Image 1: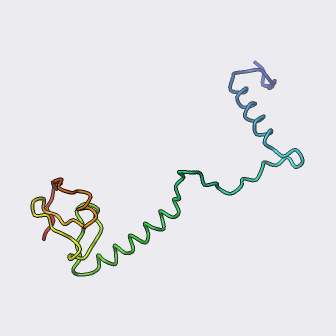
Image 2: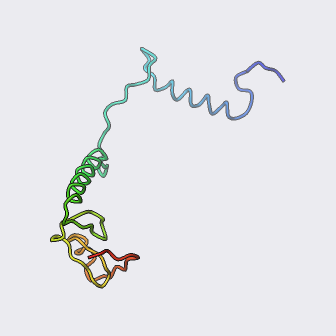
Image 3: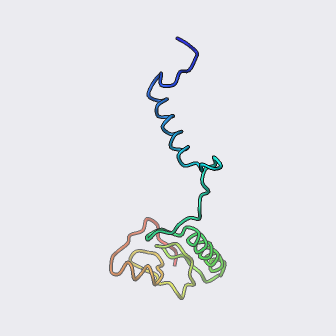
Length: 119
């Protein structure tokens, strides 16, 4: 065995590396030898704006903390957001508070809870 590297000799791994290098070199600018500048991120139909989601969640959690600090607040047993007790309905049969949005989504469906909320 020799310590000298000869192109084309050895395993298929060196062939794969050579292929990757040639693809990278094909993307380089002929004049400067630099890789092309990556442009702005494009929005495609159906793409999701994570930054807007993060901002909306921060606002929602800030509002939730504000409502939770009030003495007449309770947590919805479904979405776990805090509401004033006037905005919640206690479901005696299951033993938890439910907000209007979750109550609409649940409809007549029963939702048994492992632990009952105190009224």
